[in-house]
Image 1: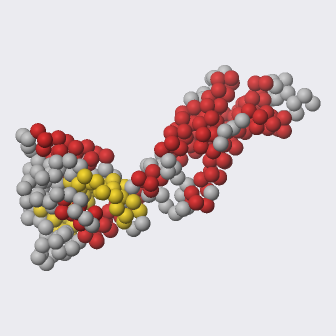
Image 2: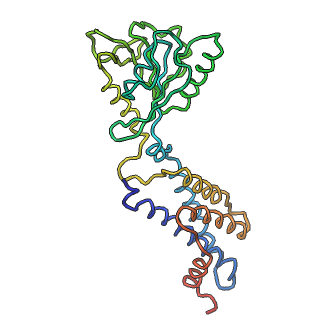
Length: 300
């Protein structure tokens, strides 16, 4: 990955250098107005600020792919009671992480397990069966299942194999989106293709007991999550701390406007330099002063 080859450090150092150049020009206009053509310099300053703002904004708009490389893509298993969610969960986890029972409503809370698929990290979550219920504890479990669905990167929505129509299962249908994989479970002793169409939607068939369709399901998860991870050569954010500092730097730069007094502009840029410096190393006042004397004919 690009992180291990020093590209991340080079990228951040490049932004630091751009910011340092802008601050140098701005400080020269403030401290040595008689030696600097402010009207000419300020035009370039605002142009560079606008470019830096655009670059930082684009970099931060990355879908948190770098963080997912550390924490894992969240895959939630959803469905009505007794759809085989916990059985699939245990199969993917390769251990008995969840209690499996024929009694509906056995799973009441959200369970999770960390796994590896194709060298990438995933967090798989088992949830309570979603249905109408008057039981207070079961209602809380259903509420948590829906919250897990909202936060998930990928949803596996499961129904028993004998399901023939989605009508009347609205609470689960409402949770489906483009990141959903539809599954028919318990397809035991069934000589059918890998998928089946119900109400115009394609369902992947699995049988955990016969170890059928699980490998294909894991492949579908990988395909759905392809855009969730950085690609080879990308420079990306893997730390929430880094992201926070970069966001604050962007906010400071983005707050600059051409109508501001240049002293206020300088203060915003100092804040940006400080936040960026928390990632790359502090920008010192001596660096800026040295650049002023090297770029401008001060006192000559």
